[in-house]
Length: 506
Image 1 (cartoon, helix red, strand yellow):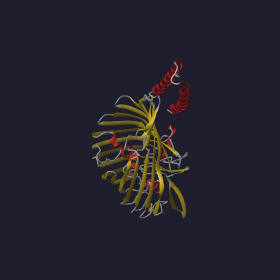
Image 2 (cartoon, one colour):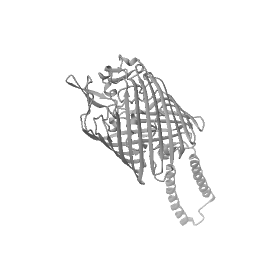
Image 3 (tube, one colour):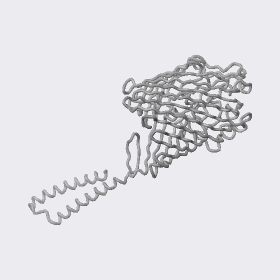
Image 4 (tube, one colour):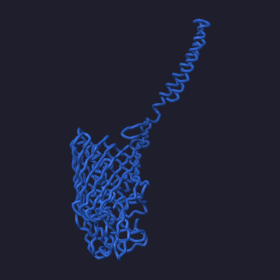
């Protein structure tokens, strides 16, 4: 088109010159100036222009296309190749206030005092993501690559023992986080075998808890519940077979297990598959399966929790199970030379069920988790040269979430969320546990409950959204439940968290 514009401009200049010549010729020879030779030249020029225009028109059917289709894309005209590119920015303000500092039980050999700062607040960008997805050779060969610009989320704790103060880092829930670096999240290839069956391989979200399967940009609150972060599976690496019909969706995956956040930094299972090479895996076997039944509505509407006014009503129920066995000494992050119970095996059996109701202006989500771990080789990595390991016995972890919402106006939505957690370890009172850092997490056998309320303002749907929420803890947030990157720190009680987030998705 640019070339055509240049040629038309040249023709206009030429036409002006010819017009002046015509005027001159008319003045000199009257109306007899147009000979048969000149007429042939004009016809030839017109035919050349028309032929060039036809050529350019025909090329449009075979050239690439690009534009906006709920996201930026580049595609071939025959639809054999397509690349969708996008990104997410979630900028936050977080204020966390502790009613009292949590201090580990005094009978421990090395009691730990967590987060002595009563009020802490500031800005961050928790989720900055870039992704590319699409298909290659055929719409039945799909791919996805997604990366997160990670933050340094380690939070220091102060150890008090023998009259000396020491610092011990509390690892974040996202393993391998380094400030400002790209952290790979999704990296997979899917093959559509038939209209209903597909197969994929790579790194992906384990088909387990629904709250984690809903993407970050489509959450109701500023962040996911602590129940989902601790009792879910997160990302895994493996293969997955999927069946999808109008009403049912079933997935089964053979994988490297789930990310062990059940007791926060205390590893009662010991699997951290995210971005781990094959020779660092600790899992002997891992199997995860999930079944969803959609009684009403479309699958796409359940990609998010909100149900805007005027949209279709629907309901979805699901159940998922996970079974895996790990041997921590076979992979990282166990430092070389670690001793103790680390050579034994752990098993993790988990089940979760959930229900989502959407009413076209209001919604209700509820989920429940139960994890049973036979933790013969629980461990806590203190530093690169020290690892505390013990037999924690049987670990039981139960939690549930209830999350209703309602639209107050076409762009304003109010929501609330109640969550409950309770983790116990049968050997937590034994001397080897009490006298170790591991005991600061396994010793606690009490429950935690939180209530969060807030508002969403959908400036331009999910693409541009402002969210603010306020949470209150009704009892101490024990170290095994804390997740500082979400605002919830370990506390002795009466903790509240205020969060505000501006989201841009493109």
